[in-house]
Image 1 (tube, one colour):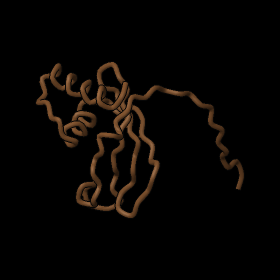
Image 2 (cartoon, one colour):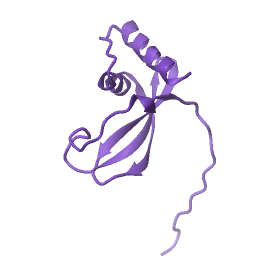
Image 3 (cartoon, helix red, strand yellow):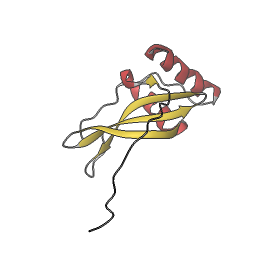
Length: 107
C-alpha cells in the first residue's frame, strides 16, 4: 500500500469509528496516536531538542509505521521546532530477529 492509500485508509477508519475526518498532518498524527494501539517504538535519530522515533501502531487490521518525536526537555515537540510529516506514514510487517546480548556475571 502506498502512502496515499494509507492516508485514505486512516480517513476511512476515522469515519467508521465516528470520528471527525481531518486531512491535515495534525489530524493524521492524532488518529495514529489516539486510536492506534502502539506496538513498537525505536529511537533512530537524536537532535539537541528532540529524538526522532519510529513508531508502529495497530490501526484496524493494519500495522502502520510513522515518525514521532520525544522531546529531551520540558517543551513539546512542536515548541522545539519538530513537525509531523505525513510522508513518514508507511505500512509495516513484523520481522523476527535473534539478538545476542552479553551480561556481566562477575565484578
